[in-house]
Image (cartoon, helix red, strand yellow):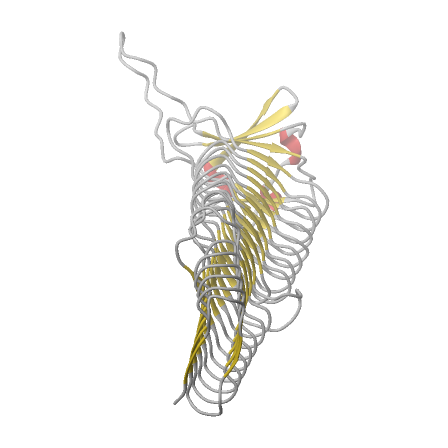
Length: 425
């Protein structure tokens, strides 16, 4: 084992084919370990360290250093300064600092940062299944790229950019975690999750995207994707492929895409667009807008005063189970195709209040627009004989005979045209 020391000047130091320890000390030094499991320490100055073959340990120390691991399972630590670290072949461990650039090279590498709360760093795992952990810089964000392989990327604090593959469309089942801050995440066949106000792009492949807290933008891209906006006012776009889109809490805008999607708006007032496929759309809580657009869709507004539009295709429209105290009706709007309007009641029994008592709320029923007699149908869980069909101006009202509860008002349709044939058995 050789021990080779430099001088305060700029030295060029070469190791042997054995396990060497090489220290550059001051000056801009060039250290080359050659073969063997070597330990290289640059010292002060802007140094260049090349481990060569073997499982080497390279320490840049102070200065703007360049560290090349070479072949073998190497450990690279840039130290202070703006450093460039390249693991090379083998399963390497790279530790960066302030505004460093880390490249994993071939192999399953681990890349991370310490003591960087201000600078902007760049990490690229390159070939292999790599783990990349960004810095906690809250002033400048990090850029992390997994490249090929099944990679794990965590941006840490700050506004970071994470990409599972350096070229979208390449293979790799990656996991991307934005961490704190407003992050941008891209991947193919990946699991992406952020905190803060994030932008997540799935790309090609079957992706899973979690927005968590913050006002997020999630784009599934091609593939069978699952998008979960989490808390906050999110925008979700499933893209091509049959996607599952979950709004969570907050005011959501969700678009399904061209395949058969499942969309759940969650809490609050959401805008849900099905796209071109045969979609299932659930409004959940809140006053939602549901639009099936193309395809044969199932639309359920859920609780709240919802506006449900069938769009093209043979759609099933359901306002949802509303509450007794709800004073604003659901609006169900048919369009092209043979649509089914699902009617419901609150179970509320109207009673005349005693003198001096506050008025009792009266269920308002659904408003049905665009009903095509002989083409569209109603669906209700009571027989036709239990209903009363009557006119109200140019409209038709449908009530439960026993309780007189109004369950639907059909706009611009004469009551004489609605018969038992219009109800599904």
